Picture (cartoon, rainbow, N blue to C red):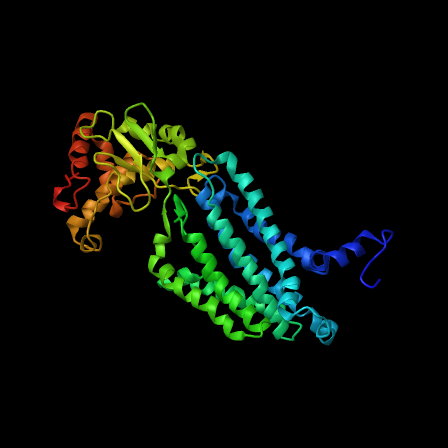
Length: 444
C-alpha cells in the first residue's frame, strides 16, 4: 500500500513516513554548513576571551561583561551571515520552483530550514559559556553568574539566525551573507558609543556588571523586545495574513519605553556585594563578599601603610571596600573598588604597592564642587599637592613621580620632619581630609 513500508525497510525510511517533520529537521541539522555554526560561534567567543583572561578570570561580573560583548557583537553578525547563507541556498541551487510544488506551507519550510542554524548557534554559545565559567569558577568568591544574561544572549542569536535567513531568501546575491555580517556589526557597534538612553535598546550594549546583576524582569522584557522585530519579519515574509506582523511589533514597541527609561536601573547591586568580610585585627580591613578570597592579600598589602600611620592621631581604624559611586560607613576609609584586570589578576593581588597607593590616595578623597576642582589659585593648588605628597609618603614605592613643581617639595619637607613632629602634623592633616577647604589644610 502507498505510504507504508515493510519491516525490512531501513529504519530511517520508516521514521520518515511516521514522523516526516522530525526526520526532516534531523536531516537539516546535519546538512551543509549548518552543523559548522556551532564550532564557529564557540571559537568566535572563546578566542577573544582567551586573549583577555587577565581582564575577566576571577570575577563573575567581569566574565559576563566580556561574554555578552563577544556573543552579541561578534557572534551576532556571524550567526546572521550563517542564516543568510542558509536562506539563499534555493536560489543558488535553482530549486526555488520545486519547493512550490510541496504541500508544506512557506512558514513551515522556513522554520524547518532556519531553526537548525539557530539551534547550532545556541549550542556553540553554551559550549563557550560553559568553558569560560569553568575557567572562572576556581578564582571567585561568593555569588555566581546571571542566568538571565545567558538567556538573553542566546535568544539574540536565535533572532539573528531567523533574520538572516529571511534576508537570504529575499536578497538573491551570493555576497549577501558577508555584507549582512558587516552591516550587522556596524549596526550593533556604533550605538555603543552613544550616551543616549536609546542605547539600552541595542542588544550589544556594553553593560557594567561588576558587582551588579540584572533586575528580575530584565530577561523576559529583553526577550520580547528582541523577538518582536524578528518575528514580525518572519511573519511578514512567510504568512499570508501579513498584517499579523504588527502584533509582535506592537508588543516590542510597548516594552521599549520601559527599557529606555530604566537605563542603568536595568541592573541592581548584587546582594553578595553588600555583605562585608573583615579581618579581626585593628586596623580592620573589610572587602566585599565578592572579593572574599582577596581579604588577607589586601590586608598584607596595607601593612606598610598601617605602620606609617601608627601613633598618628585620628588614623583610620577601619578600611572598607564600597561599591563604585558609593560611600564608606561613617569613620571608615574607602578601599579601592573592585580592581580586577589592573591590580587583581585572577585571585591574586598582582601589584600590592599600587593597591596600597590607591588606598592612601583615598585618605584624602575630598568631596569638592567643580569650582574647586578646576580652580587654579595658589591655595587650592597647595591643597592638591599636599594630598599627593601625603599619599607618596605613606606608600613611597608606587604612584607617579612628584616633581618640585607638583608636590615634590612638600614630600621632601614631610620626609625631613622628625617622627613626633610628623605624627602631629599628620594628625592635623587627617582631621581635614573630608573637608574641601584649602585654608584648613595645615601648611608643610
